[in-house]
Image (cartoon, protein in one colour):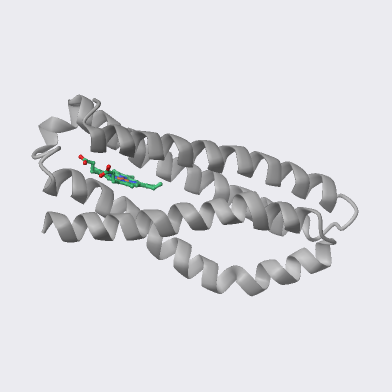
Length: 154
Ligand code: HEM
């Protein structure tokens, strides 16, 4: 059981983290440098597929992460949430929710910015810069926490 949850967790986590990093470090900066109409058309075209892939993998990360902690014996009961292992797991959960919320708010602002092509380059550039920092920082922290848990350094 633990093996299946672990594999599912790795699948979901790599898909979610890789998708977020590709969007934040490659696609969004390219969209911010494009004319508003072009960026808007691309945004609409990638919307359904990216919403599905990122939505499903994001939910799976939030489900399989805590499940992995329970199935692996790191958090056998709710009381163990206060242990060092439990606190790192909570920190990972909070980071995933926070990064998702920040990025979602950025995408909503980007969508609104398409309406005014004259201010679009400045607004989109700011959104792209902030999203890149928050996403790259969040993913780095998450990988550090996972490495720490995997290596027993807690
Ligand atoms: C809700 C957020 C998350 C929680 C609660 C969580 C929880 C866990 C737990 C408990 C383990 C097992 C650690 C151990 O060996 O005791 C694990 C492993 C792992 N997680 Fe996560 N995780 C989360 C998100 C992520 C994300 C977003 C990534 C990718 C960026 C990720 C990548 C990994 C990797 C690569 C391992 C394997 C570590 C190893 O065995 O050395 N996790 N995770």
